[in-house]
Image (cartoon, rainbow, N blue to C red; front, side):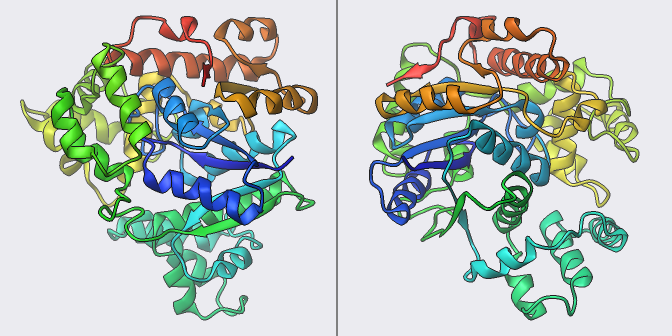
Length: 413
């Protein structure tokens, strides 16, 4: 049995995701291969709540080619790319069943990423210094990291610097590199086969039936009209995925995410301190000062207001989310997932879940009540508490009933 692991947010599930699933099965050479995404829960890597509840995104995925959907715990889902990638890959390998992993890439030559993944540059002082200097000079994190990698590995690789720079110019390439590096750590014997699939058309840029998740989020906004959303999104995402979205809304299953309301709640309820995750190097003071100067209407342009050379927007939003959910800096010392949370499965996935139960050394969680059996596991208790809290807070923004998580079994299709 071939089991293909995919790291995803499905925020929401779009045509590029279906292409990745179909292409992965083609490359594996088994149309009946099990596809097992590890999906972010209530919050995403960019530090903001997902636009759709996780059970809706799970159903979208299961109706569009996935067989089992596992949840990536909050502490890894709402994290920098290295921690995000490691948490997802560690979850896959801990399941004991993944034989292949597939992810999209933007670069033309994947062998560049494979070679770079063999170098340990995170512990290099020059690498960290260059990233800090470049970000302070106004460069994006991908650009800063690419320059640091090129500088530290100058003369040590078989590729020219311009080729490396081209390969690392997009955030997706940086994430792909982190997947490969995480695999070297979590699967040192190289048992898992890697399939790097070239993104096509406007997979991540809109148009040609491959509108990106960000394009779809912008088009949808906080629109509550079924007909309006159908007009905006029809043809831009799989029909099954859009149908799940609209059906849930029409039955009062959730309300659209209002990001300004989320920011308002964070600003008014949080005291930013250095104890929260990602709040180091003066970020807590910076955000407290901004809070004091906010005026009516400023939340609509919050990105512009908080934009600074010293901190990336992703870092700022992840720090704010951590403060809101209650993740202190000590949680970042937990390097690996403490459980496998099942969000949903289909007919083919049901059998695979039985195999996971026999192969994994981690607790397999189907319902929140299952966590109670492992109350003596400190790391499990810490991570699960963050998952539950993040879902409650995000759920309230999406109009979900209080403690709906306790009543929501895995999605079955």
